[in-house]
Every structure is written in structure tokens, then in C-alpha cells.
Image 1 (cartoon, helix red, strand yellow):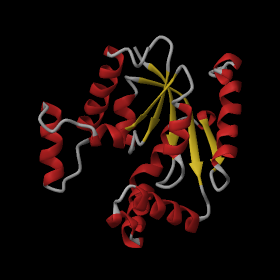
Image 2 (cartoon, helix red, strand yellow):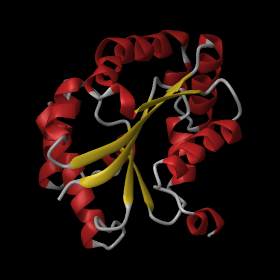
Image 3 (spheres, one colour):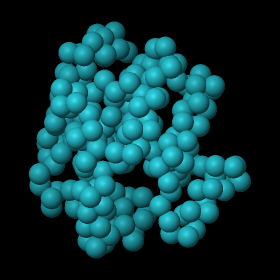
Image 4 (spheres, rainbow, N blue to C red):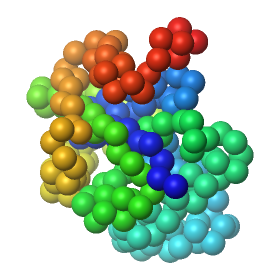
Length: 203
């Protein structure tokens, strides 16, 4: 079975986590952030040991393992009845990170829409990332050098994913505005897709 899926796509600091968290609180929607999946991984588990082996060597986790880890997490949500594949819509944030992952995930997800969250104001993005790093007490991530590197990696590896999906499935949303304005655009589009009912909006 392929999961009905919405992808939140965009550079670091574009607001994916903010919108995903809000949308995930709507009944019938389940938000899964790939970063949280890795951070919550039990290091003693078989998958955790493989992840620790790569991360301890400073190596990138292979795409097939990343997708395997994601799928194990999704299966766990289903078994715990936190995700109903017959009813719920998945909201994915942070995956797929490259075209290879997008291809691997085709067997598992039926992408209804890709929300490309884009902020043209680079300074605003830098400020958001610094604020988030300080809020999460990750002071190393607050440096301009680290942030510039993250944005470079996004442009080199992740941005091409946008070209993998059909243009008619992509909605470009300006996130230089307030989170409420961004959310309003997404909700309006979900209504047009008939993925959001009036009852869900009011619950």
C-alpha cells in the first residue's frame, strides 16, 4: 500500500517544521520529520547501530538505509495505530533529500502535492536559523559558516528533487510572510484537493 502523502520542501529555515507541526495537529494528518526520526533512533537497535557506525565516521548515511529507516518508523506508527494508511495523509518534512531517495520512496508514497516553501530574503533565512539554533542550544549551528554550508548542500543535493515531481503537483509558497499567511495558502490548496474537509478544519 502506498501512503497518501504531502511533501514539505524547501531550504533550511524555510518554515517546513513550523507548518508540518501545525498541519500534523489536524485530524487525519500525520507529520513525520526525518530529522526527528534520526534523533529518536535507539542506538542499541540494529538500525541504530548502522546509523551510529556511519555518523561516528562522519560519513553520509546511504540512501537505501535512510529510506529503510524511514519505512521502519512509518511501520511503527501503523502498528501503534498512530497512522491509519486507509484514512490518514502523511506530511513528510526532510525526506526525500535527493533524487535517489525520491525514486526509492515511489514504492511507498503517493505524492498528492509538493509544497515548495521558499523565502527569497536570504538574510531572513539566516536570522531564522540562528534563532532556532540558539533556541535548541545548538550554538555551533548558529555560525554563519555552518549555515552557509547547509544552504550550499541544499542547493547542490536537495533542490534537484523539485524537478523529479510533475510540475502540476508543485505549489510554490512565499514564506517570507507570517506563518499564519503561509498556513492559509496551504489550507486553501488542501481544500481544492479535497484533502481537507470543513469538519477537519473545525475539529
